[in-house]
Amino acid sequence: MNTIPIDGWEGATQYFTFGADSFGVWLFLVLAVLLFLTVIVRAITHEGRSYKEIHAGNISAPIAMEPESPPPASEPAAMA
Amino acid sequence: MNEEVTSALETITSVNNEFFYWVSIALMMLIHAGFLFYEGGASRVKNVLAAAMKNLLTLAVVIPSFFFVGWFLYNAFPTGAPELNDAAKAALPWSENMGPNLADPASGIFWGAFALFAATTGSIMSGALIERIRISAFLILTAILGSVVWIIAAAWGWHGGGWMLTELGLHDVGAAGCVHLIAAAFTLGVLINLGPRIGRFVDGRARAIVPHNLPMTMLGLMLIFVGFFGFLMGCAIYGGEGYTTIFGTPMNLSAFAFNTLMGLAGGILGAYLSSKGEPFWTISGGLAGVISVASGLDLYHPAVAFVVATVGGASLPVVAKLLEKVKIDDAVGAVPVHGVCGAWSLIAVGIFASDYPNVAGPEPSLGGQVLSMLVFAALGFIPGYLISLALKAFGILRVPPSVEHFGVDAVELPSLPYPEGIPPTARPNGNGAGLGAPVGGTVLDRSDI
Image (cartoon, rainbow over all chains, first blue to last red; front, side):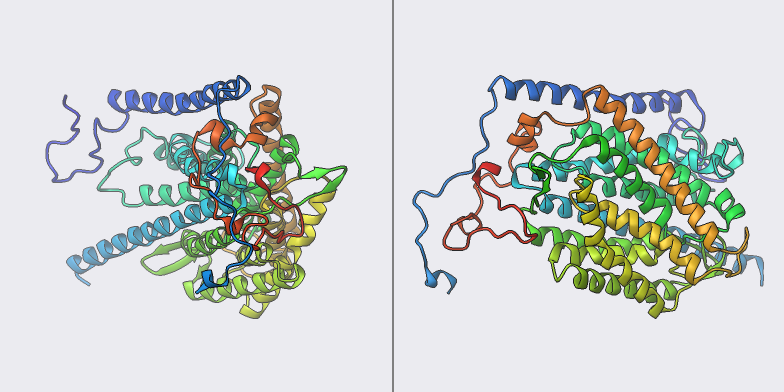
């Protein structure tokens, strides 16, 4: 794929892939915007599904591990 | 001076200019690291990662959207109405200036600095909405705020040809109005539609929901302070003959150093006094202080900056109380810190720095500053309110109550910030340490996790 808009570095100005206002730049701009919008839409649908899961009871409570035994009432040595 | 020397000097100036803003951009990244910690710490354990992810995604959403439309809007809107001038054409994302170009060492670096300003507006909003907004709704709001709303304000008020400069003589060198106030006003509009967190107001009375990790919040704010030095670098125009403000008036970084530091100190002390030493408000006072002096950073005597900042810092708990009275749950005080202090910053220039010579418009005046403040507030509030109202109408603004009870992390991400639990000493009744209520409100218990 020929993406290079220059023949050499001498006198080069803009030299990014495809070159300004080209079909390639437009194509990738459209793709980038679509990707951007897709992420937003996916976030919305992902949330909708996640909320249904919790209503269906498919997500368990994120309870952190409990200590195996209650901590002692006081333990001054712990500070040492 | 012969041609070679002239050419070498031009090259050095260009390289220095690029490097100056490169450093500014890098330092501004710390603002986002700071907000991530700040809001993560301010959340309850069940929502820490959602708060962090919002900040991370703010960058990821605002940067491309600012590339697509933001830079164009800045260059197309200075006179108020859209204008397809040469600068606007050069800012279109398919133009030869919006990509690697050996003849243009400025566009990318200025675009980058402005993109980080834009992301900062999103981060300002983010903290206020924690623990109940849907991440997708936040992403939509932050893209619109960061890439459309604030940048139109910047075009109007912060552009060399902006009508608020040329007609009103606006002086807002550190972007207190066009970044902080507009973001906070937008946020206020969203907060009205979003509503408070469950449990924030019970039987008509406000209950504090305390940060799960106040030291983390404080670290976040310290990072934001560092980042603001980069933010303020981006507010200066650096060229071969020294610095000017974005309005073209002469300045130097010494002025910024005097007044940023005195503002930081004044804000902290003001909040320390008025909050009776409460840590969250005291450290937030530092940010409030810098914002309070931001509009006149280049003009104030440091003692004036200190007093102006102290007033701003002292206002925080008072304004937060007023918001509570109208049942608005601004979880981190974004409206007092960025909104009220942003407005105060603009007004303070009108009081203490009117009639300084201007380059591209009338001299700054109290009337011009107040009018500009009202324009910024309206330009932020109206879209924030209307767009969030629309999201609410579609049912995609807020998480359902069951998810709010459960925690956004486990349901939406899903992940846990502390999978091995919280140290027993951090739990109520654990090893005699218990869990205090530093803001004088609710005490966390296991049912909150």
